[in-house]
Length: 390
Image 1 (cartoon, rainbow, N blue to C red):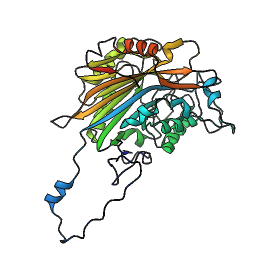
Image 2 (cartoon, rainbow, N blue to C red):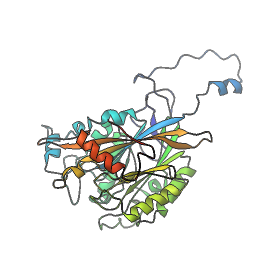
Image 3 (cartoon, helix red, strand yellow):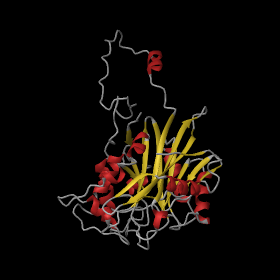
Image 4 (spheres, helix red, strand yellow):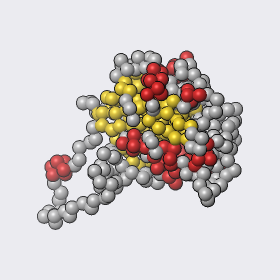
């Protein structure tokens, strides 16, 4: 069962692709993807409606929803990733990259990605590491796979300048994917990022510890959300603003700190613990390491320190950068009305680097075993994490 997803007013994004049901802003989806017109109402017998009748026919508030999240999305140039996606007309089609995991993404009520790099104009020029400007068609593939929302704050956010940042957000908007972490205007930066998931308002905040030495654009210090490890006071302020704007759940995406290390740094751990100690943050998702890092339950709330790569082709790192994970969390409304995670799951996946294609697939047994060992390095399984097949 899917829920409609729309961005909060004033954020400039179109209605998302998943609207499948009844009334204007939020609708519960039925088993069919086709919209069913409402049955005709009987003619009213009075000009005054009955409050009692309205109360008894109003749908109950949703009691739970499921969120999935994945790791870094990068498009390295001149390798099988781009060559395998090239079309005869010179364009690109990356849909096959995500086809193997799309059912897991689409089965969730909210799917979150981390788009680490800016996109270039259609037709290029394209560039890879160290300064990325990648094929915009990758955003179409993300939308087709089922992603609803992406964090965009990373050390590569300004690789193609402020124009590239704006182009990336415009491309996400055109694909119906909501976003946070980078902004086109002061007003956009000041507006909490909240999406409606079947009647639950979910806030998303994002930040990065680095811009690779690229300064924020002159006169536009709001363009990227940044922080100095481990000071997450700005993130906490954004989370508080999202909560004040009506968010019932707030997710924080943190791009930090050391690459290619399965163990979080001390500063990373302090930042995560500070975030989860706040009543305004319910879940932390980590990026940037390019390898899987542990999950941990901290005072009843969950952190995924590092989700690895969701799409990348690192040439010399071996299976570490090809092992990955899909995090899946079920939030349930408690008796007091607040949502908490009642089920935490991890789906091991792997990036398959073929000679002529790259694909994200359910993990084979050896990969699943490696990923599970990393995820459980801080006692996540004993704390309730289920490590499940895709």
